[in-house]
Amino acid sequence: MLNRKYIGLKWKFTLVIVSVLIVLQILLTYLIYTDTTRNFNLHREEAQHHYNHIAKALLNKSALILEQLAETVLSPTIKTQTSATVKDQIINILDENWENWQYIWDLTFTDFYNTDRQLLRVWGVPLKYAEKRHFQVLQQEQPLHSIECSEQCYSIVTIPIIADFNLTGTLSLGKTLADSIIEYQNATDTDIGILTPLEKQRVDTSWSYSLSAVTNYDLNHNLFEKIKQRFSVDDLLNNSRNISYQSHDYNFKIFPVERNNDYQALIIIVDDVTQQLEELYSYLTKIVISGLLSMIVTMLILVLLMQKSLKRIHNLSNALPLLAEHRFPIFRVALQTKSLFKFGYDEIDKLQTTSYELSYQLEELEKNALENNLLLNHKSQELKAERDFSQKLVETAPIII
Image (cartoon, rainbow, N blue to C red):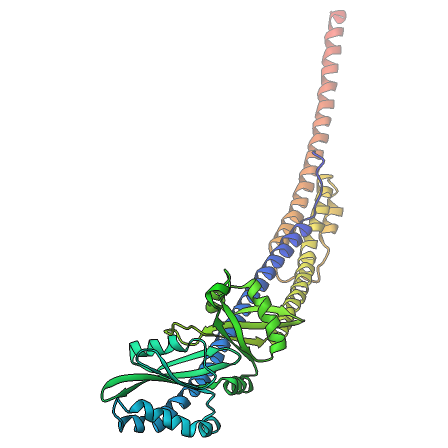
């Protein structure tokens, strides 16, 4: 018989069961992890879009205030004037009411252009892109909402001035976005920034926007520099991203303010998700630990039950050599070992019963073979005696004759 390394059946079963349970636990943990992180990311996307709606609502609110000013104060004046006198009348009205409107309507600047794109008058500090803005309104003859930033960021409404059905000029009204940004931060407890296009000679290959205004400036300015190094504008327009900074985790996304505006301002929303991520990781850790504990307990129970059940096979395997050695009584005694974990009559019981009966049959066959051998030996002795007698008779017959 070949000398092979012996590995018990119970250990083979144990190895298979433990391997299957470990693979199933790893697969289950992976599925739970992917599903949980996917749900978390979906929740963050929904939260970012919700914050975006709030931000745009506040920005639109600022623009609507300026439109209301134009409609309630300037429109009646424009309707009563001719195209020849309306310009002077608007200038007079603004000269007389500018200081009051700054206080009441929170205006910060106003500029007035004619149809030749010439600046007629400016109240407050003129902005850099005023001529481009007025040119767009002159061509489209539709009010334009825009955001522009210099030292501050402004919400601007530019409207066409039409008298006697003729376009006579354009007027811009602007107010600072500081109040809207503060109102947004108080409503959402998140930070918001305004991104404005860089001048062409200053545009680099990855980012063509600068951070013109932002809440919590000291933190978010440094965070924005780190964001620029790792992500592109297009990437942040399509997806929300996470970044770690100073032991905190931040989720951020970029949204366009006006999709059809050539002067494209963007808003960036930054949300501190440190606590949410800690709760997520804590939940996943509990899932993994509970899964491991349940797997270990299940393995121990299965292995215990399996080893107790296979103990009868072990006893049978130890008893079979006794059968081969014709030690039948000892073999039957070895088969009579009782198990505490026996549930009903099973294949092992059938094998033991068959082996038990086989031992009697083999013992009987051995007895019969022994008796036959003894009888055969006795017959052989008798035949030998008769042969010897016949031989002696043959040898003595001539002498008698």
